[in-house]
Image (cartoon, rainbow over all chains, first blue to last red; front, side, top):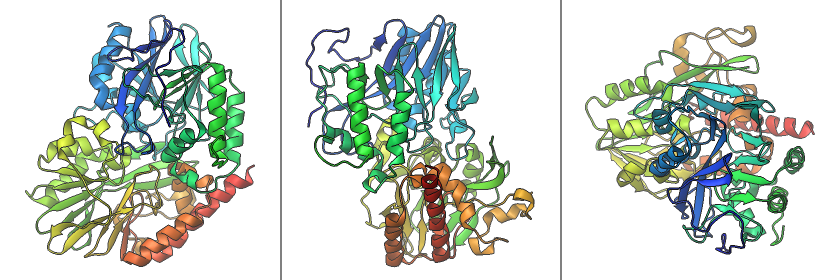
Length: 289
Length: 276
Protein backbone atom coordinates (compact mmCIF):
# COMPACT_ATOMS: atom_id res chain seq x y z
CA UNK A 1 0.00 0.00 0.00
CA UNK A 2 1.10 3.53 -0.47
CA UNK A 3 1.17 6.71 1.47
CA UNK A 4 0.25 10.11 0.16
CA UNK A 5 1.46 10.65 -3.35
CA UNK A 6 3.05 13.77 -4.70
CA UNK A 7 0.05 14.55 -6.89
CA UNK A 8 -0.85 18.16 -6.67
CA UNK A 9 -3.89 19.70 -8.23
CA UNK A 10 -3.90 23.20 -6.89
CA UNK A 11 -4.75 24.51 -3.47
CA UNK A 12 -2.61 26.36 -1.04
CA UNK A 13 -0.48 23.40 0.01
CA UNK A 14 2.84 22.88 -1.63
CA UNK A 15 4.68 19.61 -2.09
CA UNK A 16 7.77 21.12 -0.57
CA UNK A 17 7.16 19.66 2.89
CA UNK A 18 7.83 21.73 5.94
CA UNK A 19 11.54 21.26 6.54
CA UNK A 20 12.15 23.88 9.15
CA UNK A 21 9.01 25.74 8.11
CA UNK A 22 5.65 25.54 9.88
CA UNK A 23 2.67 24.59 7.72
CA UNK A 24 -0.09 27.17 7.45
CA UNK A 25 -3.41 25.32 7.57
CA UNK A 26 -5.69 28.35 7.95
CA UNK A 27 -4.02 31.68 7.19
CA UNK A 28 -3.21 33.63 10.32
CA UNK A 29 -5.18 31.22 12.48
CA UNK A 30 -3.97 27.60 12.48
CA UNK A 31 -0.54 26.07 11.86
CA UNK A 32 1.07 22.64 12.09
CA UNK A 33 4.62 22.31 13.36
CA UNK A 34 7.00 19.39 13.86
CA UNK A 35 8.74 17.06 11.45
CA UNK A 36 8.67 13.61 9.90
CA UNK A 37 10.15 10.31 11.01
CA UNK A 38 11.27 7.32 9.02
CA UNK A 39 8.74 4.52 9.42
CA UNK A 40 10.31 1.35 10.77
CA UNK A 41 9.87 -1.19 13.51
CA UNK A 42 11.28 1.19 16.09
CA UNK A 43 7.97 3.08 16.20
CA UNK A 44 5.25 1.38 18.19
CA UNK A 45 2.16 2.95 16.67
CA UNK A 46 2.76 2.15 13.01
CA UNK A 47 2.45 -1.10 11.13
CA UNK A 48 5.73 -2.66 9.95
CA UNK A 49 3.98 -3.51 6.67
CA UNK A 50 4.48 0.00 5.33
CA UNK A 51 7.53 2.11 4.70
CA UNK A 52 7.77 5.82 4.17
CA UNK A 53 7.73 8.88 6.36
CA UNK A 54 5.22 9.84 9.00
CA UNK A 55 4.62 13.43 10.09
CA UNK A 56 4.56 14.02 13.85
CA UNK A 57 2.67 17.20 14.59
CA UNK A 58 1.90 19.85 17.11
CA UNK A 59 -0.53 22.62 16.29
CA UNK A 60 -0.61 26.36 16.95
CA UNK A 61 -3.88 28.28 17.13
CA UNK A 62 -3.39 32.04 16.93
CA UNK A 63 -5.94 34.66 17.84
CA UNK A 64 -4.68 38.23 17.99
CA UNK A 65 -1.77 38.28 20.37
CA UNK A 66 -2.81 34.96 21.93
CA UNK A 67 -1.39 31.56 21.12
CA UNK A 68 -2.43 28.03 22.07
CA UNK A 69 -0.23 25.05 21.31
CA UNK A 70 -1.85 21.63 21.04
CA UNK A 71 0.95 19.19 21.89
CA UNK A 72 4.63 20.04 21.46
CA UNK A 73 6.19 17.32 19.29
CA UNK A 74 8.99 14.86 19.94
CA UNK A 75 12.46 15.68 21.24
CA UNK A 76 13.96 14.43 17.96
CA UNK A 77 12.42 17.47 16.24
CA UNK A 78 13.22 19.98 18.98
CA UNK A 79 15.45 22.26 16.93
CA UNK A 80 12.95 22.49 14.08
CA UNK A 81 10.03 22.93 16.47
CA UNK A 82 11.68 25.88 18.19
CA UNK A 83 12.62 27.45 14.85
CA UNK A 84 9.13 26.99 13.45
CA UNK A 85 7.47 28.45 16.53
CA UNK A 86 9.89 31.38 16.52
CA UNK A 87 8.53 32.29 13.08
CA UNK A 88 4.98 32.39 14.45
CA UNK A 89 5.18 33.61 18.04
CA UNK A 90 6.67 36.94 19.03
CA UNK A 91 8.68 37.51 22.16
CA UNK A 92 5.76 39.14 23.97
CA UNK A 93 3.45 36.14 23.59
CA UNK A 94 3.39 33.50 26.29
CA UNK A 95 1.66 30.54 24.66
CA UNK A 96 -0.68 28.28 26.57
CA UNK A 97 -0.29 24.54 25.94
CA UNK A 98 -3.04 21.92 25.75
CA UNK A 99 -1.85 18.35 25.93
CA UNK A 100 -3.87 15.59 24.32
CA UNK A 101 -1.94 12.92 26.22
CA UNK A 102 0.92 12.78 28.75
CA UNK A 103 3.10 10.67 26.43
CA UNK A 104 6.42 11.98 25.18
CA UNK A 105 5.29 12.22 21.55
CA UNK A 106 2.95 14.96 22.80
CA UNK A 107 4.94 16.51 25.64
CA UNK A 108 8.50 16.05 24.42
CA UNK A 109 9.34 19.71 23.80
CA UNK A 110 7.40 21.33 26.61
CA UNK A 111 10.39 22.24 28.74
CA UNK A 112 12.33 23.67 25.78
CA UNK A 113 9.29 25.67 24.63
CA UNK A 114 8.68 26.89 28.18
CA UNK A 115 12.30 28.02 28.42
CA UNK A 116 12.11 29.82 25.06
CA UNK A 117 8.65 31.37 25.24
CA UNK A 118 7.73 31.45 28.92
CA UNK A 119 4.79 29.07 29.13
CA UNK A 120 2.84 29.79 32.31
CA UNK A 121 -0.19 27.51 31.95
CA UNK A 122 -0.48 23.95 30.72
CA UNK A 123 -3.93 22.46 30.18
CA UNK A 124 -4.96 18.83 30.26
CA UNK A 125 -8.34 17.25 29.83
CA UNK A 126 -10.47 15.74 32.57
CA UNK A 127 -9.95 15.60 36.30
CA UNK A 128 -6.67 14.93 38.02
CA UNK A 129 -5.97 11.25 37.47
CA UNK A 130 -3.06 9.51 39.17
CA UNK A 131 -2.70 7.23 36.19
CA UNK A 132 -2.17 9.85 33.47
CA UNK A 133 0.68 11.83 35.08
CA UNK A 134 -0.14 15.16 33.39
CA UNK A 135 0.97 16.92 36.56
CA UNK A 136 4.42 15.38 36.05
CA UNK A 137 5.15 16.61 32.53
CA UNK A 138 7.43 19.40 33.74
CA UNK A 139 9.46 17.06 35.93
CA UNK A 140 11.01 14.72 33.39
CA UNK A 141 14.01 16.72 32.25
CA UNK A 142 17.29 17.69 33.80
CA UNK A 143 15.76 21.06 34.63
CA UNK A 144 12.22 20.94 35.94
CA UNK A 145 9.92 23.53 34.42
CA UNK A 146 7.53 25.56 36.51
CA UNK A 147 4.01 26.29 35.35
CA UNK A 148 0.44 25.75 36.43
CA UNK A 149 -1.33 22.62 35.21
CA UNK A 150 -5.04 23.34 34.84
CA UNK A 151 -7.60 20.69 34.00
CA UNK A 152 -10.47 21.30 31.60
CA UNK A 153 -13.40 18.93 31.83
CA UNK A 154 -14.77 17.26 28.73
CA UNK A 155 -17.40 19.40 27.07
CA UNK A 156 -16.03 22.63 28.51
CA UNK A 157 -14.51 25.42 26.49
CA UNK A 158 -10.90 26.47 26.71
CA UNK A 159 -10.52 30.16 25.99
CA UNK A 160 -7.72 31.22 23.70
CA UNK A 161 -8.51 34.92 24.02
CA UNK A 162 -10.22 37.66 22.05
CA UNK A 163 -13.49 35.72 22.12
CA UNK A 164 -12.13 32.52 20.60
CA UNK A 165 -12.36 29.19 22.36
CA UNK A 166 -12.03 25.52 21.58
CA UNK A 167 -14.04 22.67 23.04
CA UNK A 168 -12.31 19.93 25.00
CA UNK A 169 -13.50 16.39 24.25
CA UNK A 170 -12.96 13.00 25.91
CA UNK A 171 -12.95 10.56 22.98
CA UNK A 172 -14.47 7.09 23.31
CA UNK A 173 -11.43 5.65 21.48
CA UNK A 174 -8.34 6.06 23.60
CA UNK A 175 -5.35 4.14 24.87
CA UNK A 176 -4.37 6.34 27.80
CA UNK A 177 -6.21 9.29 29.25
CA UNK A 178 -6.69 11.29 26.06
CA UNK A 179 -8.17 14.61 25.07
CA UNK A 180 -9.42 15.70 21.67
CA UNK A 181 -10.35 19.29 20.88
CA UNK A 182 -12.60 21.03 18.39
CA UNK A 183 -11.96 24.51 17.04
CA UNK A 184 -15.25 25.90 15.69
CA UNK A 185 -13.51 28.83 13.98
CA UNK A 186 -11.53 26.59 11.65
CA UNK A 187 -13.83 23.53 11.92
CA UNK A 188 -10.82 21.45 12.95
CA UNK A 189 -10.97 18.32 15.10
CA UNK A 190 -7.68 17.58 16.89
CA UNK A 191 -7.56 13.81 17.38
CA UNK A 192 -4.30 13.04 19.17
CA UNK A 193 -3.26 9.42 18.47
CA UNK A 194 -6.38 8.57 16.45
CA UNK A 195 -6.41 9.00 12.67
CA UNK A 196 -2.67 8.29 12.77
CA UNK A 197 -2.86 5.87 9.85
CA UNK A 198 -1.46 8.08 7.07
CA UNK A 199 2.07 8.72 5.93
CA UNK A 200 4.12 10.14 3.07
CA UNK A 201 6.09 8.43 0.31
CA UNK A 202 8.63 11.22 0.30
CA UNK A 203 9.95 13.20 3.23
CA UNK A 204 9.66 16.37 1.16
CA UNK A 205 5.88 16.20 0.74
CA UNK A 206 3.66 18.45 2.79
CA UNK A 207 1.98 16.71 5.77
CA UNK A 208 -1.49 17.51 4.46
CA UNK A 209 -3.83 15.25 2.48
CA UNK A 210 -6.66 16.49 0.33
CA UNK A 211 -9.14 14.22 -1.44
CA UNK A 212 -7.07 14.58 -4.60
CA UNK A 213 -3.82 13.59 -2.93
CA UNK A 214 -5.08 10.80 -0.70
CA UNK A 215 -3.96 7.31 -1.72
CA UNK A 216 -4.99 5.65 1.55
CA UNK A 217 -7.07 2.48 1.47
CA UNK A 218 -9.06 0.70 4.17
CA UNK A 219 -6.46 -1.99 4.79
CA UNK A 220 -3.93 0.70 5.60
CA UNK A 221 -6.30 2.34 8.07
CA UNK A 222 -6.88 -1.01 9.74
CA UNK A 223 -3.19 -1.96 9.91
CA UNK A 224 -2.08 1.20 11.59
CA UNK A 225 -5.08 1.61 13.87
CA UNK A 226 -4.59 -1.95 15.15
CA UNK A 227 -0.87 -1.32 15.65
CA UNK A 228 -1.69 1.46 18.07
CA UNK A 229 -4.83 -0.03 19.61
CA UNK A 230 -3.57 -3.60 19.94
CA UNK A 231 -6.73 -4.72 21.75
CA UNK A 232 -8.76 -4.31 18.55
CA UNK A 233 -7.55 -7.85 17.74
CA UNK A 234 -10.15 -8.94 20.29
CA UNK A 235 -13.91 -8.55 19.94
CA UNK A 236 -14.74 -4.99 20.89
CA UNK A 237 -18.00 -3.65 22.27
CA UNK A 238 -20.16 -2.25 19.44
CA UNK A 239 -20.84 0.70 21.70
CA UNK A 240 -17.44 2.14 20.79
CA UNK A 241 -18.27 2.79 17.13
CA UNK A 242 -21.73 4.07 18.07
CA UNK A 243 -20.25 6.61 20.45
CA UNK A 244 -17.66 7.69 17.90
CA UNK A 245 -20.43 8.37 15.39
CA UNK A 246 -22.32 10.42 17.96
CA UNK A 247 -19.18 12.45 18.56
CA UNK A 248 -18.66 13.18 14.85
CA UNK A 249 -22.30 14.18 14.51
CA UNK A 250 -21.94 16.87 17.15
CA UNK A 251 -19.42 18.86 15.13
CA UNK A 252 -19.10 20.40 11.68
CA UNK A 253 -15.69 18.99 10.77
CA UNK A 254 -13.71 20.09 7.74
CA UNK A 255 -10.27 19.09 8.96
CA UNK A 256 -8.78 16.34 11.14
CA UNK A 257 -5.50 17.25 12.79
CA UNK A 258 -3.80 14.20 14.34
CA UNK A 259 -0.57 14.02 16.32
CA UNK A 260 0.70 11.17 14.13
CA UNK A 261 0.26 11.30 10.36
CA UNK A 262 -1.09 13.78 7.87
CA UNK A 263 -3.71 16.45 8.36
CA UNK A 264 -6.90 15.36 6.58
CA UNK A 265 -8.19 18.39 4.71
CA UNK A 266 -11.77 18.81 3.53
CA UNK A 267 -15.15 17.53 4.72
CA UNK A 268 -15.34 14.83 2.06
CA UNK A 269 -12.00 13.33 3.03
CA UNK A 270 -12.82 13.63 6.72
CA UNK A 271 -16.04 11.66 6.29
CA UNK A 272 -14.27 8.96 4.29
CA UNK A 273 -11.65 8.42 6.96
CA UNK A 274 -14.26 8.52 9.73
CA UNK A 275 -16.18 5.73 7.95
CA UNK A 276 -13.01 3.70 7.61
CA UNK A 277 -12.06 4.10 11.25
CA UNK A 278 -15.52 3.08 12.36
CA UNK A 279 -15.30 0.00 10.13
CA UNK A 280 -12.09 -0.92 11.95
CA UNK A 281 -13.83 -0.50 15.29
CA UNK A 282 -16.62 -2.75 14.03
CA UNK A 283 -13.99 -5.39 13.31
CA UNK A 284 -14.46 -5.41 9.55
CA UNK A 285 -11.52 -7.18 7.97
CA UNK A 286 -12.26 -6.84 4.24
CA UNK A 287 -10.37 -4.69 1.82
CA UNK A 288 -12.98 -1.98 1.50
CA UNK A 289 -14.29 -1.52 5.03
CA UNK B 1 -12.93 15.70 41.72
CA UNK B 2 -9.80 13.89 42.64
CA UNK B 3 -6.37 14.82 43.79
CA UNK B 4 -2.90 13.42 43.53
CA UNK B 5 -0.21 13.93 46.13
CA UNK B 6 3.08 12.10 45.99
CA UNK B 7 3.65 11.05 49.60
CA UNK B 8 6.48 13.24 50.86
CA UNK B 9 8.53 10.49 52.47
CA UNK B 10 8.44 7.24 50.51
CA UNK B 11 9.20 4.27 52.75
CA UNK B 12 12.63 2.69 52.64
CA UNK B 13 13.16 -0.02 50.02
CA UNK B 14 12.23 -3.59 50.87
CA UNK B 15 14.27 -6.59 49.82
CA UNK B 16 11.48 -8.85 48.51
CA UNK B 17 13.89 -11.64 47.57
CA UNK B 18 17.68 -11.85 47.96
CA UNK B 19 19.13 -8.86 46.04
CA UNK B 20 15.74 -7.89 44.60
CA UNK B 21 14.55 -4.56 45.97
CA UNK B 22 11.18 -2.75 45.90
CA UNK B 23 11.72 1.01 45.51
CA UNK B 24 9.69 4.14 44.84
CA UNK B 25 6.66 5.22 46.76
CA UNK B 26 2.95 5.78 46.75
CA UNK B 27 0.62 8.52 45.58
CA UNK B 28 -2.29 9.46 47.77
CA UNK B 29 -5.40 10.10 45.74
CA UNK B 30 -9.10 10.51 45.93
CA UNK B 31 -10.90 8.94 43.00
CA UNK B 32 -14.68 9.23 42.80
CA UNK B 33 -14.78 10.01 46.49
CA UNK B 34 -12.67 7.04 47.50
CA UNK B 35 -9.35 7.70 49.23
CA UNK B 36 -6.59 5.40 47.98
CA UNK B 37 -2.89 4.83 47.91
CA UNK B 38 -1.44 3.99 44.53
CA UNK B 39 2.06 2.58 44.24
CA UNK B 40 4.47 3.74 41.54
CA UNK B 41 7.29 1.28 41.95
CA UNK B 42 10.60 0.58 40.27
CA UNK B 43 12.55 -2.55 41.25
CA UNK B 44 16.30 -3.07 41.51
CA UNK B 45 18.02 -6.42 40.93
CA UNK B 46 21.70 -6.66 41.89
CA UNK B 47 23.72 -9.55 40.50
CA UNK B 48 27.41 -10.25 41.10
CA UNK B 49 28.41 -8.52 37.86
CA UNK B 50 25.61 -6.20 36.90
CA UNK B 51 22.44 -4.54 38.13
CA UNK B 52 19.06 -3.82 36.51
CA UNK B 53 16.45 -1.21 37.32
CA UNK B 54 12.95 -2.24 36.22
CA UNK B 55 10.89 0.93 35.57
CA UNK B 56 12.17 4.30 36.77
CA UNK B 57 9.76 5.63 39.38
CA UNK B 58 7.34 8.56 39.29
CA UNK B 59 8.99 11.84 38.30
CA UNK B 60 7.90 13.49 41.56
CA UNK B 61 9.57 10.65 43.46
CA UNK B 62 12.90 11.29 41.75
CA UNK B 63 14.76 12.53 44.82
CA UNK B 64 13.68 9.52 46.85
CA UNK B 65 14.41 7.03 44.07
CA UNK B 66 17.83 8.57 43.51
CA UNK B 67 18.67 8.28 47.21
CA UNK B 68 17.33 4.72 47.39
CA UNK B 69 19.57 3.72 44.47
CA UNK B 70 22.62 5.38 46.01
CA UNK B 71 22.05 3.52 49.24
CA UNK B 72 21.48 0.10 47.67
CA UNK B 73 24.18 0.28 45.01
CA UNK B 74 26.69 1.58 47.55
CA UNK B 75 29.12 2.91 44.96
CA UNK B 76 28.44 0.35 42.24
CA UNK B 77 27.23 1.46 38.85
CA UNK B 78 23.72 0.87 37.64
CA UNK B 79 24.21 -1.10 34.43
CA UNK B 80 20.83 -1.71 32.79
CA UNK B 81 17.63 0.29 32.62
CA UNK B 82 14.49 -1.57 31.55
CA UNK B 83 11.25 0.40 31.64
CA UNK B 84 8.29 -1.88 31.03
CA UNK B 85 7.00 0.84 28.68
CA UNK B 86 7.56 4.51 27.92
CA UNK B 87 4.58 5.96 29.82
CA UNK B 88 5.64 8.60 32.36
CA UNK B 89 4.87 6.65 35.57
CA UNK B 90 7.16 3.89 34.30
CA UNK B 91 9.84 5.71 32.30
CA UNK B 92 9.51 9.32 33.44
CA UNK B 93 12.89 9.36 35.22
CA UNK B 94 14.77 7.73 32.35
CA UNK B 95 16.53 10.93 31.26
CA UNK B 96 17.65 11.69 34.79
CA UNK B 97 18.89 8.11 35.29
CA UNK B 98 20.90 8.17 32.05
CA UNK B 99 22.52 11.36 33.26
CA UNK B 100 23.16 10.17 36.82
CA UNK B 101 24.54 6.75 35.87
CA UNK B 102 26.91 7.35 32.98
CA UNK B 103 27.52 3.65 32.30
CA UNK B 104 23.85 2.68 32.35
CA UNK B 105 22.27 1.49 29.12
CA UNK B 106 18.67 1.18 28.08
CA UNK B 107 17.97 -2.42 27.08
CA UNK B 108 15.01 -4.38 25.76
CA UNK B 109 12.28 -3.33 23.34
CA UNK B 110 13.39 0.17 22.39
CA UNK B 111 10.21 1.28 20.67
CA UNK B 112 9.87 5.06 20.40
CA UNK B 113 12.80 5.92 22.69
CA UNK B 114 14.90 7.23 19.77
CA UNK B 115 12.22 9.89 19.30
CA UNK B 116 12.20 10.83 22.97
CA UNK B 117 15.89 10.62 23.93
CA UNK B 118 17.74 11.18 20.63
CA UNK B 119 20.89 12.30 22.42
CA UNK B 120 21.25 8.88 24.10
CA UNK B 121 20.74 6.41 21.27
CA UNK B 122 24.36 5.23 21.52
CA UNK B 123 23.40 3.82 24.92
CA UNK B 124 20.46 1.78 23.64
CA UNK B 125 20.77 -2.01 23.34
CA UNK B 126 17.98 -3.91 21.60
CA UNK B 127 17.37 -7.23 23.36
CA UNK B 128 15.04 -9.98 22.12
CA UNK B 129 12.33 -11.58 24.18
CA UNK B 130 13.31 -14.59 26.30
CA UNK B 131 17.07 -14.28 25.76
CA UNK B 132 18.66 -14.29 29.25
CA UNK B 133 20.34 -11.08 30.33
CA UNK B 134 22.88 -12.44 32.77
CA UNK B 135 23.73 -10.39 35.85
CA UNK B 136 26.14 -12.79 37.54
CA UNK B 137 25.71 -14.94 40.64
CA UNK B 138 22.94 -16.91 38.97
CA UNK B 139 20.72 -13.88 38.40
CA UNK B 140 19.28 -13.51 34.93
CA UNK B 141 16.43 -11.52 33.49
CA UNK B 142 14.14 -12.52 30.64
CA UNK B 143 12.03 -10.03 28.72
CA UNK B 144 8.53 -11.32 28.03
CA UNK B 145 5.52 -10.14 26.05
CA UNK B 146 3.05 -8.34 28.33
CA UNK B 147 -0.48 -9.77 28.15
CA UNK B 148 -1.91 -6.96 30.31
CA UNK B 149 -0.72 -3.60 29.02
CA UNK B 150 -1.68 -0.23 27.69
CA UNK B 151 1.04 0.70 25.16
CA UNK B 152 1.41 -2.04 22.56
CA UNK B 153 5.13 -2.76 22.99
CA UNK B 154 5.05 -3.08 26.77
CA UNK B 155 7.34 -5.78 28.14
CA UNK B 156 7.20 -7.84 31.33
CA UNK B 157 10.35 -9.23 32.95
CA UNK B 158 11.14 -12.40 34.81
CA UNK B 159 14.11 -12.90 37.14
CA UNK B 160 14.71 -16.62 36.99
CA UNK B 161 16.74 -17.36 40.11
CA UNK B 162 14.27 -15.74 42.52
CA UNK B 163 11.21 -16.40 40.37
CA UNK B 164 9.97 -12.80 40.39
CA UNK B 165 7.69 -11.62 37.59
CA UNK B 166 7.67 -7.85 36.97
CA UNK B 167 4.40 -6.86 35.33
CA UNK B 168 4.26 -3.06 34.82
CA UNK B 169 0.59 -2.12 34.64
CA UNK B 170 -0.51 -5.73 35.11
CA UNK B 171 -1.93 -7.02 38.43
CA UNK B 172 -2.56 -3.42 39.50
CA UNK B 173 -4.58 -2.57 42.57
CA UNK B 174 -4.76 0.18 45.15
CA UNK B 175 -4.66 -0.08 48.90
CA UNK B 176 -6.15 1.90 51.72
CA UNK B 177 -4.40 4.99 53.06
CA UNK B 178 -3.63 5.60 56.70
CA UNK B 179 -6.93 7.33 57.37
CA UNK B 180 -8.92 4.57 55.72
CA UNK B 181 -11.45 4.73 52.89
CA UNK B 182 -15.08 5.29 53.70
CA UNK B 183 -14.55 4.89 57.42
CA UNK B 184 -12.71 1.59 57.24
CA UNK B 185 -9.62 1.07 59.35
CA UNK B 186 -6.53 2.25 57.55
CA UNK B 187 -2.93 1.33 57.93
CA UNK B 188 0.22 2.65 59.47
CA UNK B 189 2.79 4.27 57.18
CA UNK B 190 5.03 1.21 56.95
CA UNK B 191 2.28 -0.83 55.37
CA UNK B 192 2.95 0.57 51.90
CA UNK B 193 5.75 -2.02 51.75
CA UNK B 194 3.68 -5.03 52.82
CA UNK B 195 3.30 -8.06 50.61
CA UNK B 196 -0.25 -8.82 49.55
CA UNK B 197 -0.66 -11.55 52.16
CA UNK B 198 0.53 -9.21 54.90
CA UNK B 199 -2.05 -6.47 54.27
CA UNK B 200 -4.61 -6.09 57.05
CA UNK B 201 -7.32 -6.59 54.44
CA UNK B 202 -6.75 -8.88 51.47
CA UNK B 203 -7.06 -7.18 48.08
CA UNK B 204 -10.51 -7.47 46.55
CA UNK B 205 -11.77 -6.86 43.00
CA UNK B 206 -13.00 -3.46 44.19
CA UNK B 207 -9.37 -2.51 44.92
CA UNK B 208 -8.46 -3.33 41.31
CA UNK B 209 -11.50 -1.80 39.59
CA UNK B 210 -10.40 1.83 40.04
CA UNK B 211 -6.97 1.19 38.54
CA UNK B 212 -8.41 -0.88 35.73
CA UNK B 213 -10.96 1.79 34.79
CA UNK B 214 -8.47 4.64 34.94
CA UNK B 215 -5.27 3.10 33.61
CA UNK B 216 -6.52 0.54 31.08
CA UNK B 217 -9.23 2.25 29.05
CA UNK B 218 -9.67 -0.78 26.78
CA UNK B 219 -10.85 -2.94 29.69
CA UNK B 220 -14.39 -1.65 29.36
CA UNK B 221 -14.47 -2.52 25.65
CA UNK B 222 -12.92 -5.99 25.56
CA UNK B 223 -13.77 -9.25 27.29
CA UNK B 224 -10.46 -10.01 28.98
CA UNK B 225 -10.86 -13.80 29.06
CA UNK B 226 -8.50 -14.26 26.11
CA UNK B 227 -5.94 -12.10 27.85
CA UNK B 228 -6.44 -14.13 31.01
CA UNK B 229 -5.52 -17.27 29.07
CA UNK B 230 -2.24 -15.62 28.03
CA UNK B 231 -1.51 -14.72 31.66
CA UNK B 232 -2.24 -18.24 32.84
CA UNK B 233 0.02 -19.79 30.19
CA UNK B 234 2.81 -17.47 31.22
CA UNK B 235 2.36 -18.25 34.91
CA UNK B 236 2.23 -21.99 34.24
CA UNK B 237 5.46 -21.76 32.29
CA UNK B 238 7.43 -19.65 34.77
CA UNK B 239 5.67 -20.39 38.09
CA UNK B 240 6.57 -17.06 39.74
CA UNK B 241 6.80 -16.97 43.52
CA UNK B 242 6.35 -13.21 43.52
CA UNK B 243 4.54 -10.89 41.12
CA UNK B 244 5.84 -7.32 41.25
CA UNK B 245 3.38 -4.78 39.82
CA UNK B 246 4.18 -1.15 39.18
CA UNK B 247 0.93 -0.21 40.89
CA UNK B 248 0.16 -2.37 43.90
CA UNK B 249 1.71 -4.18 46.82
CA UNK B 250 4.05 -6.95 45.76
CA UNK B 251 2.07 -10.16 45.40
CA UNK B 252 3.13 -13.36 47.17
CA UNK B 253 -0.11 -15.19 46.34
CA UNK B 254 -0.01 -14.94 42.55
CA UNK B 255 -2.89 -17.28 41.80
CA UNK B 256 -5.25 -15.68 44.33
CA UNK B 257 -4.50 -12.23 42.93
CA UNK B 258 -4.86 -13.43 39.34
CA UNK B 259 -8.46 -14.27 40.26
CA UNK B 260 -8.98 -10.87 41.90
CA UNK B 261 -7.55 -8.95 38.95
CA UNK B 262 -9.62 -10.70 36.33
CA UNK B 263 -12.76 -10.41 38.46
CA UNK B 264 -12.08 -6.67 38.28
CA UNK B 265 -11.74 -6.82 34.49
CA UNK B 266 -15.08 -8.61 34.34
CA UNK B 267 -16.76 -5.95 36.51
CA UNK B 268 -15.40 -3.09 34.38
CA UNK B 269 -16.44 -4.78 31.13
CA UNK B 270 -19.95 -5.64 32.34
CA UNK B 271 -20.53 -2.18 33.84
CA UNK B 272 -19.80 -0.54 30.48
CA UNK B 273 -21.90 -3.03 28.53
CA UNK B 274 -24.73 -2.59 31.01
CA UNK B 275 -24.67 1.17 30.54
CA UNK B 276 -25.74 0.95 26.91
